[in-house]
Image (cartoon, rainbow, N blue to C red; front, side, top):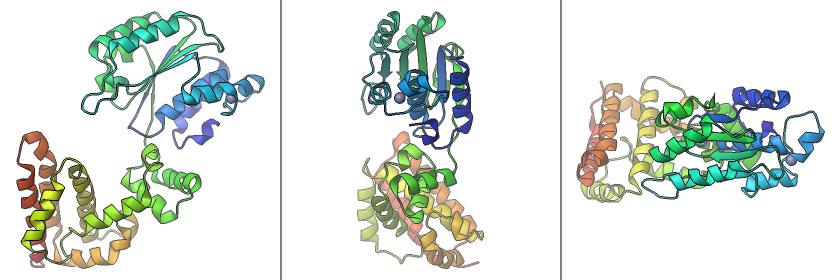
Length: 338
Ligand SMILES: [Zn+2]
């Protein structure tokens, strides 16, 4: 699999290919940028390129993805490559000092099959302070044959001393067009589904590749029905909905979809066209609603939704605040046109 398999990230890709071409490989790299956009995949390609059996015999720095070395690196079984991930823990996943001790042990001996002993540290911001300190000692005096790649979406959480020891490569979000094209090619999705997933995941390709478009659409429809202008549901229905939406599994979804629905409504009230909308297929309905509600009222609802989003961290009664919001959302329908 060559580097061209990675969506976007032309800048980092070129820098790494040039380093490979010139044989100027640093000891430590820091890959930064939002989650699920391809940083880890790039690190895999880079390490594959360093030891690919085909690359060594050709002038291209791109790895083949097929040889034994490439396959072992991708599957995490190559003896010269150590993959470090945070311990699985829902509330506070950490990389503890024991893992850094493993890393020290890994790099101390010469590589067996390749030119380097490599350590990939995913979500490096999860290193505990002790672990980060121990890693710093290794980074300050790395063995000649070692290579470290730290991957993080929150570089500022890492100690500056650790960051300063690494060559930093910043990964930007791929464009919507790049993500849509990748989804059409790699998953054979329709243009409509590709567009929906690109928008819903905010162009995070790693997430978009795994998201089910059918399920996404059904949730989109479910939450869109809460918008003003969709009739005036009786209060008992609203109370039931509030109970359902206040659970911790549903809550983030409710906020996510409602904020997108309201954003679309706001865009239509100020004259946006359907291509700018997540709910482009609901454009006629949104236009009808937009005639009945002023932009100020939609902005007001968006602000209330933002308050609702903060409710769990402010120890508020989630169900009560949700009921309140849904009632206001319903009442917004009866706003007189101005
Ligand atoms: Zn290969």
